[in-house]
Length: 237
Image (tube, rainbow, N blue to C red; front, top):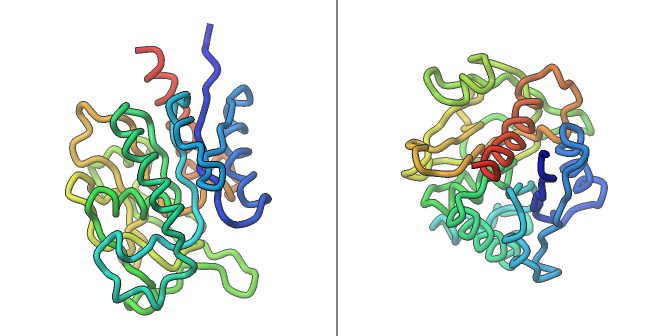
């Protein structure tokens, strides 16, 4: 009998409605999954040990001190050092346990910084196109998957369409990570393990699959199903 999955999801600072989208996104593909809300406000980081996987959600900016760029503090939008520290501890524990990790938007940025990578503090200032919604209109763009990466096999394509709600992004990938998808202007859209052997599942995406409604789009569907499958594989080995 298949065991019910328990998924730890970090609580965003923003609205309940936005947070619920992350929960609904995973439960759309596994209605039996249980969710543990992990939040510095509840000081419940120890609950990660009863989870089968960790989803790091979007939200406010990672503090520039974490990637050695305190000169970018003036462009950072509401960095929360308490949340950063709380989620750093969750990442450390999840990696120690070989727990599957899914990082979305800020989640990608935070894991990259945790592992020694750097960020663009503000994309327009860094010379890139706008990657966020304007005047209430959703921003979408094409991503190009790097040939030969695991993401190519996972998505079954070298290109696809995603949404975009961010002004920060990974700059230099951490030494243990490799770039597996890029936007047309060269912004890093996804990261994966450079050498996955002996490591737990890790998928880091800059887009927001939880806000995408087209289940035929592999860049939405596969993010959820691969994460869920990795948890089932982990608990059955």
